[in-house]
Length: 365
Image (cartoon, rainbow, N blue to C red; front, side, top):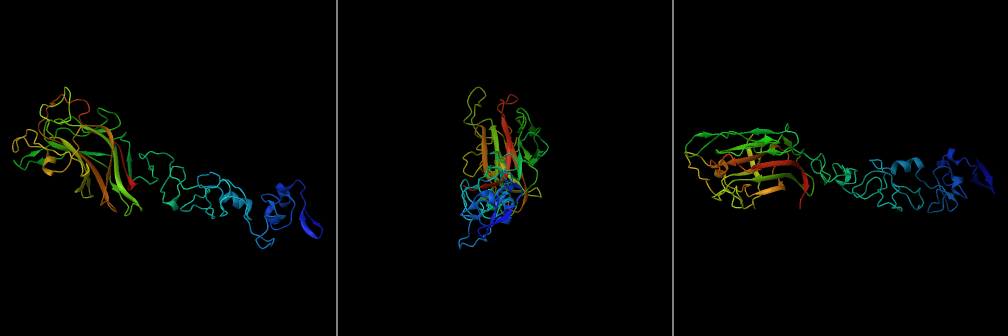
């Protein structure tokens, strides 16, 4: 109810302020918050507080506007504190008590979330202005969003085989001109469930490939980021100098190994990406094979580093240069020579196993 006291317009608090819109009282004299109606405060004798010039017509946010700007896109609320002439609340451009920052717009900013909290990957709120593609509030990369809040282009925990192709290519021995092909290749879930295995350890020469679905890369991964392949793997090949125990081969020579490379849309090799060029392991022996009779590992002819030293489950990270703006496939290829000292009694885990494959923009380090 509005009355006149001492020639000034004042507000009478009659216990019904919940029905009174405080926006109508902005700039009017008051004695307590109740005089100003719902959503307003009485400060320095004026509803909403006086302006810097003493004019009682200051502009402030209504309670509805405050509620809107104080709520983030994921539904979390911000804290409000001391007023400096405007209604306290997130979005007023002033860092009040309990706020990390205040964008002043009610929207996300590059350095502040809309709920007035600091930008932080992993808080469950994707701030696109800060360069986040997504934020699923976990530290797993094997899902639609990496732990660096970038959308993954490919992720697969390898629990289901349907996404991948396998191939056992024939190849021609340069010495004899004869064509050869392995009898078995990649298998899903054998002997370890939830991963791809390179199959029965071969007693003949050749390669077998595990091929990803097509992966489309944007022309630019983002400032400070590059495209990267990450995966878990485990491998063990016969003739490795590091092998010891009852299944160790008498001649510790590397004749078997594996590589990762990139295939373009036409099915042509683009580049080898793994192992890294700094890797010391290479196929250093024909493995007892006689070229022209029993050919060697086809990967031996290519040269370059291979995965061959014994390793238990470990994480690999390989940059993918030159894929920007392209659609490509990843190829995990294992190669054998014709000499298998284990014959049909290869130890458990012989060969190569792949799990938890992720392709995404990752921060350059």
